[in-house]
Amino acid sequence: MMFSPASPTFSPFENQLSARRRTPFWRRGLAFGALVPAVWGFYFWWRPPAPMLHLRHEEHLGRDSKNIAITFDDGPHPLTTPLLLASLKRARVRATFFCIGGNLRLYPELAHRLVEEGHALANHSEPHHNLTTVDARDFPAHIKAGFTSIARVEADAGQQNHSTRLFRPPGGGLNRAAMDYLYRNDYTLAWWSNNVGDWTCPPAWRIAHGVKTHLEPGDIILLHDGGTGTPQAIPAIVKAARERGLRTVLMPERGAP
Image 1 (cartoon, rainbow, N blue to C red):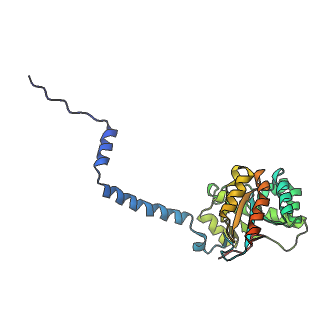
Image 2 (image 1 turned 120 degrees about the horizontal axis):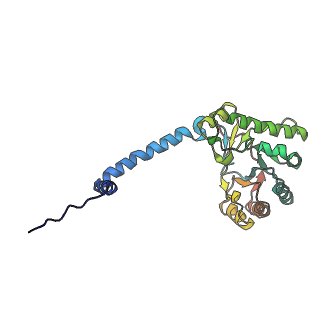
Image 3 (image 1 turned 90 degrees about the vertical axis):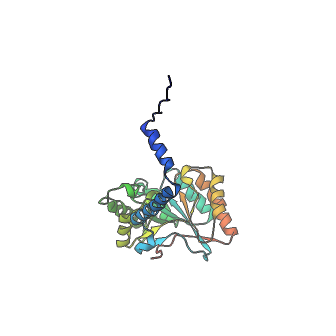
């Protein structure tokens, strides 16, 4: 008696995998090619570049500039802000501090020191929430409260006729709704061009090496007020800038439209 072998049986997953393997490569490439522009199109609609919305923005001082700007996010901090101030004083440079409004209210003596020692205050929002995660009805209050806290500190410190328009979103989180709000209120979006990622609290030598390796004329350097390595890295960064003929200035208030 002759027996014919039984036909193999496959699971639904194996059948789907086999069918996918039979799909011509050009067809899969065509589908992928159509998906990429769709994803990028959605991204540019959700978060268009600032120039598309005519939003004032500052991300670089210009390649022909002989200046750089050092900026610090997230302060003031009771441990690291005094260290930063001491390091900046020894290096004889001024910086722009993008402050959290809530921290300005928690540590008013540090806020006043920043102003009195010649540094500039700028807005990093009131509660430091990523704006892409905040309801569109709520984030304007986060931004406005940050500017209000800064104005109060400057008034208490006796600084008259100065009101910053610089805003840097926490975590760089921004979408079209937030950008529209900044544009309507004539605020300047404050970006950066040199970011070594010191928010992860690496050692001072690594921070200094990272900044110096990528340092270019016109750079806006993003650092953070929260790690002990950053204050120690300041002298080496300033020294490298001066050796290249670069001068440290405060971040300009009015960016390109």
